[in-house]
Amino acid sequence: MQIYTLFSGSSGNCVYIKDRGTELLIDAGKSAGAIEKSLTALNSSLSNIDAIFLTHEHADHTVGLEIISKKYRIPVHITAPSYDRMVSPTSSLCACAWRREVHYSTRIGSLTVTSFEIPHDSMQNVGYIIENEEGEKFGVATDMGHITEEILSYLSGCHYAIIESNHDTGMVKSGPYPYFLKQRILSDRGHLCNEECSRLAIFLAERGTRALTLAHLSRENNTPDKALSVTRQALDTAGFFSVELNVASPIITTCVHK
Image 1 (tube, rainbow, N blue to C red):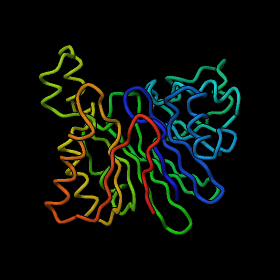
Image 2: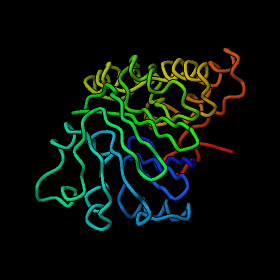
Image 3: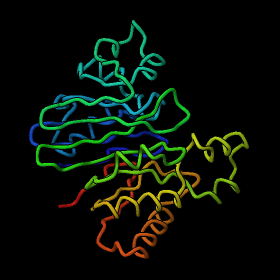
Image 4: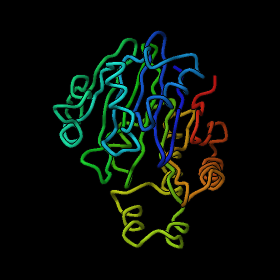
């Protein structure tokens, strides 16, 4: 299984997965042209994508969907609450969207995709588990206000995972954001801080995760060095020196090295 973040952060999010002849996207939070350019750099194209799986309806995860739907007619899987908020009868997306239950599982080519619930201040947010026929298991979970038992249960046993390390709490509190926005970020339906991310990383490492990518970093309230340092130190202190750890950049990042 090949896994890349094409984009990550508040300016746009998109994950690309390839396994044998199956190619998927999770989210399309950049323009169709930008996503196509990134896929071309990986010797692929939107015309090769078999399906898109949406985590939630916020613009940094969805902005490219209308043009992609109009031009490429790719099936887009969206949970019912997000679908009802964002899909209008006159949009091109309407003809391509599959309105899904919050918890669902489907087979696309060689990959099985399963959703799970994540707390966030959207109509509905989900993470995904993707598993291939060889039993390789990959999980993605971002935009997390807090870590729930459901998140731990679904991510447990993943060989690879993309998890959120959005902010440094001190930077949020002392930064220039208005009070209401600080409260949103720090709430239990906001985003995950570096320290909480590190605790999730240890949990996953204890259950066999071999490679982790820290994603959805705030441009204003975090730095790649801070995020990496907090989780790397936590993993090393717990004895998980061999767990591969990297940070998703705003452009293409390889999430699994083989």
